[in-house]
Length: 219
Image (cartoon, rainbow, N blue to C red; front, side, top):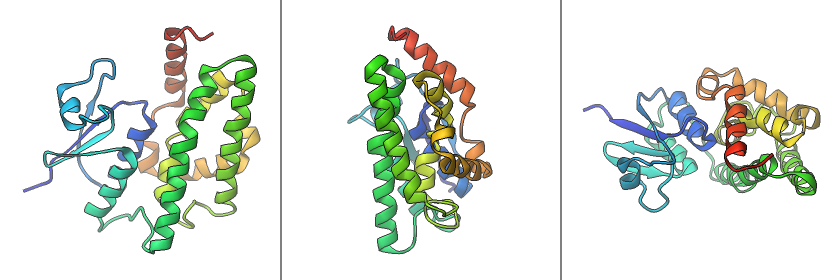
């Protein structure tokens, strides 16, 4: 019997995009279900009763939650194609470390960037670029974070790139000017069909952020 794979997701979620890329890399067919995060579906509440958030991968009726956990699960289950994690234990540990760094630093710094203003925003800019510079240094002169091929850390970070225009626009910054090597890496990742087809248009994300700012009264 063929696997039944369902992804509960929200279009603008950089965490859900990770799962979409992983599934595309593996060539896994799945059913995509868009969630209304203001009115979560009974299925989402049933499949992720602890955090009640997306993404959730439902594989043959069994849920897997948290984006990085889901990506590792996908890599283990569909292991015959496009490995995402390195084969060596040390290299895998390093990849998990940097993916966790992205999770711990990038999301909140980016959110604070577009939701703050004045002196607070100036402080957030320094914090945000500090994180990007750390990542840029780790990338070094390698084509991808893991070396010559697209992998786990690349997948973890590249989904933020479709938010970069929103960060630039609403955070009054220029990521391209500050982190040119990272932007070259973005271009290499976007040349992959699995990535390009999984990420939404940056203009759409920028408009989405403008809508959130209006809703939260941030001007």
